[in-house]
Length: 399
Image 1: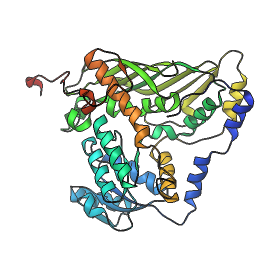
Image 2: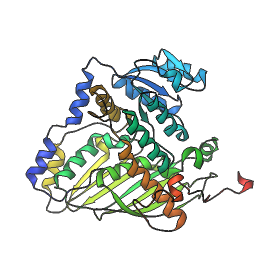
Image 3: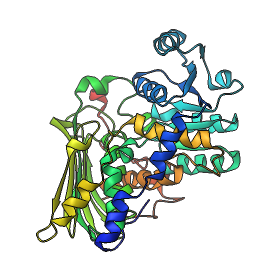
Image 4: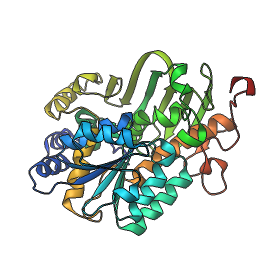
């Protein structure tokens, strides 16, 4: 995480806006290398296609498709020109394989990542990387012992405009962060939740807080740094499901900034919105499942109109999405060992995001404000997002 810095001078801001972007250069350089990162895709459901496309665009070699359903694995392999299929990760771990992309339902993410590490493979894990903070801690320990890496998919960090905002924020030109909002207002009908594994605490780890809004508030945390405390409400208002279908939180950051966070799957006009109010400017983005530069709006405070020129001077472009993050992951893997080039987003990076999700659930279920760092061994929300307190449990007649 990168906590915001205090205001700086315009020269520093100009330098931040125009300095070479080392990570972008490394990703671009990777495209010209002869080494191809060899990848296995684990799980061939809907999200696997986004991974396959991003990996192919990034110049990776798709080596094997893994699924417990052999027909689905073969169909997926045929669609993406993958020569081999396998029924298990162990079977897929052939010589020369560098990394596996784990695209299975959430309950298997941490288990498969640990298995990959034990087999000497790097792993990329879809969100959420684990169902609980305990699972994530265990995975961190396995990674540390393996010499390999686990990278978590939080792709909104990697769009051009978000990285431009991060650089301008670091320069100090925007001043202190003050207030904002982070809204994930999506719509999923009852049929979506009628799929057997959806909306189950022990399979998905939670509802829209864990599985949908986590994309947006990960970007919020990435930009505004560590959170300090959260107060939240949640409920099951419109869907027959174990988990919540909406949550709402107020988050205080270590910097003193405040933001609201809404995570909903019962909102007919779907949108994803983030607003960042600094002392010297407001920066906003509104999109749905991914953004480009056209989705962003920059508004200088009165008397700070020169900041518009700094924003416009940084011409970084690029949509958020799997492809943007995979460019960085592949460049890091091609560069060497995790010690010399650790792929983004690390498990440590992801922990703060997962901890906020756990904090939202803990606050909403217990009615207490939750401080960062308080959900540890012995806290029921360390082991499971609902604390095993079964909130909003379905009546037997509705199950």
